[in-house]
Image 1 (cartoon, rainbow, N blue to C red):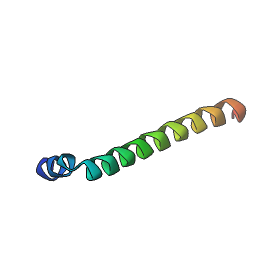
Image 2: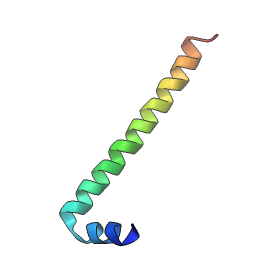
Image 3: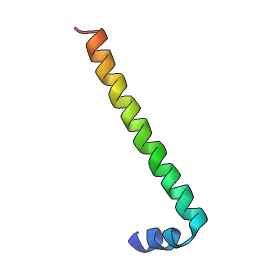
Image 4: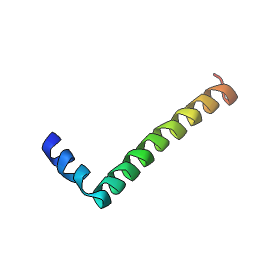
Length: 45
C-alpha cells in the first residue's frame, strides 16, 4: 500500500489528483461537522 502511494507521489499529475482528493474529503468532513453542530444548535431536542 505504501509502495503504491509512493509511486503515485512521484508523478506530479498523480500527486495533484491525490492532493485534490484528500482536500475534497477533508472539506466534506469539515462541512458535515459544521452541519451537525448547526443542527444541534438550531434544532435542540
